[in-house]
Image (cartoon, helix red, strand yellow):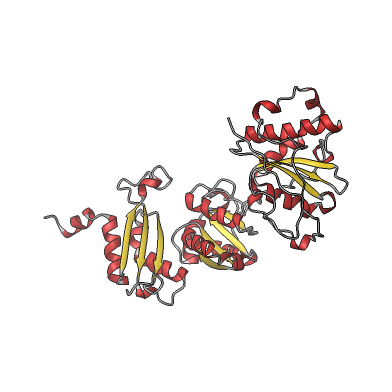
Length: 289
Length: 105
């Protein structure tokens, strides 16, 4: 069973905090969407369920025992970059939303950025060994406590309220080079490739789709681009239906014999090795901007 | 004591890669590691009975001096063109100059 410890933080003053200097954590938020369903699907019916917080999350502090943490100016280190449950309070110290996250600091920063008027301070309960069950239990326990005290669900947790749920950008579809293999091309494939890499800032030719790359190197490239927060396009070189002949043509076009291949501003940057090396050296970020 | 053609067949791809890179790049460091086992079962590998499909290469050569990473990789790929055409599936390349590794070369 997971052990859960609470993390108490001191109350801090609340200087103004503009959205410009809000830290951006697009990378670390990736695991969040899988949990948002928990909060959005929550309904009044849970009121009637027996309280069970003392069973699993006995070490998690109650909301009442946790301290407020305010938002300092542009400093992200105040909130733990760990998994756990958090409650967001507005300026009237009303709970607006109770959420769980794999990275509390990142989630809280994102909330502050998207709805600053509703984020005045936060209470945090870190969950150690945060498997899904432990996180869910922690969330339930805080929700139940809140409901027991106030008799209502935090507005942000009401069914249908999407204020706090990250508007998950839909994963882009992979680009298709041709309308399909039954359509006769009027321009050479090479020209289609040329246009594609010049019209899109970052293009990764990978094996498999961006949501399910079929080769470890392609997967790594997608991971790097995601972690850089890049706005990139992908083309599946294994898609015979829409990208038939692409592998051979692209090898000649780029003078590069293997995949994945990443293009930025129409130029080949390289494959997985080069991208990894640039990523590690921090050279990639400026190029992808 | 087979024919020359027979002998070539018996030389492993790893050795051919090593020879090609060594003679062309005059590498001061050349590591050729067969990592095909990591990719067993992967498309394009199954059909290859010899299964020397994936290699990690670590090359230090003065010939990389002044060349971008893309150019260095292309130099290696060009030297291995025959291998890539005959079942070599992917190589992971670390291409450095003696200066970059801080050695005397």
